[in-house]
Length: 356
Image 1 (cartoon, rainbow, N blue to C red):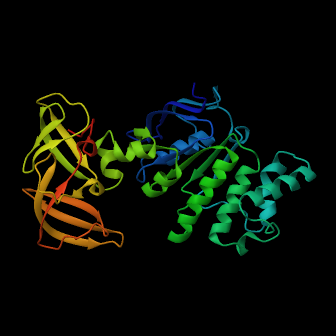
Image 2: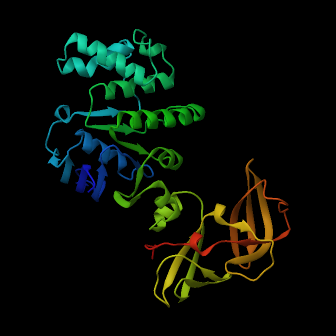
Image 3: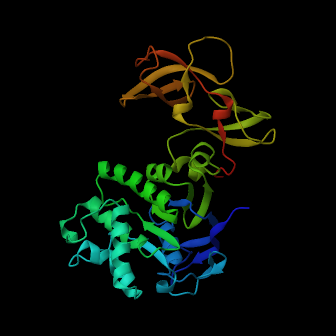
């Protein structure tokens, strides 16, 4: 039986004067010790959900349960949640140690215990020996670590992070992804973080909740979300894809105009219209010339060199396919050349909830 540490049930937030809810009947649960990414474009409601869980915003309706207890009406200072803000929200006039100890002081923890817990928290985030420095003397990555230490030192029920890496440069962002994931795994704290960056979500989270226009589109593991998107929005928002509209001729076989027969995974009634997707990296060069399923011959119209891969645009019939091929894949195509691409039926995804 799964231990659902966090349960969100039919959560709604409608601001006064708004024509529609910012968060519209969102429900999900999170097992203890997992990290969940709330992922979506700006204005989709993900930060509003995080702030409602924290107690910074009151929900219009719905329930927020921690260990089965509804905390929706409990004040923010009684929820025992650690929050890392986008701006870090550190006190610039205080030392790192005072910033980290602030929550413990508010809870009237004894001085000796505060010193022990602050040292432990700083060691955890690799800021050992920097407790007496001013926040202004820290780098962006160190400030991020200090903010995490301040959130973890109170031993929170839940760690909440709002766009935690958005203020860092690209190289530091990559480093901090691993750092945050390692800290969360080491402490075992249940965590929810907000991001609009799909790479960040895919690399850090145990599960992703993809949001659009205030609604939850899909929740699942990174692999499920990437390889088996259930809606048009998820398919187009996460990664690149080749999209086809077709009519099911027989189970698992669709006729796509301008491309021909396309075999796919998934169940759709014969005669129905379907939306299908193939990720560019799932297309491979087929040099056998043998008859087979899902093989498409065409002309290379465009090539982009990306170091480890080549991104090709290939005209096949009336369709254009994008293919990402490894640069070590033997003899590589040239612009204007004729090639044959192939894809396994299990790598052709049937999108269950395609837009009308």
